[in-house]
Image 1 (cartoon, rainbow, N blue to C red):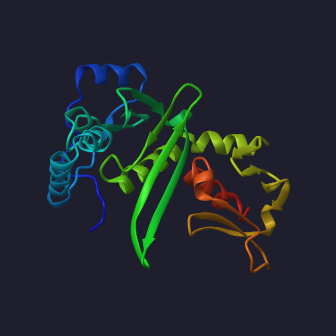
Image 2: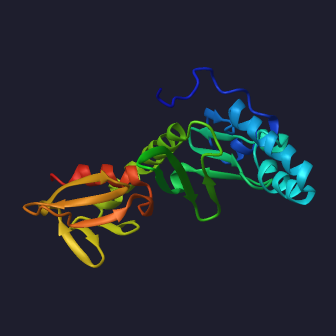
Length: 247
């Protein structure tokens, strides 16, 4: 079943949060995500483990409870109350490990997205998402702690693209060099590790196996490769490359 945001509209914001969003000019609320919770079987197994440890070893039981269980929303009301809020112009996210809260605007963000998948005995597991957002004055890390990770990760990428796309295009046409981590974009082409691939030699760009691949005309092997998680604002990068590779 595809991971989608519930059809119900986001609940009203608490007054303090609404005031914070207004101070930063975040605009309308578009989605709210709650923490993930364990299923009944997994939660029951934790209770059984805790009961066995309490019966046999009191100290390990206390450590298991406070180090592992108290970090989860199933066993800690404070964790369960945390939220990830997406707005028209930014986000507000409660820190997953502490009491803090971070505000990030899309037009200021450098967004790094990492997707990983563990393979156990040849069977691939679910994709795990982590988004790191950095601005001159703040940074935030959003992980599988929150529900619907595929949805919020894609929403963040598209929001950054909308907020920064026109500005990046104007800078490109004005002759500026655009910094995308391991890649630099300019009117001359794409630079990677002090090597330049002119636009007229670029055959395409692909996302494959968690990497960004740049393909060169007439060459079977990729001209350059970089981990997708190392390229900030990945969707913006891909959009600019596609827009100019055929110019």
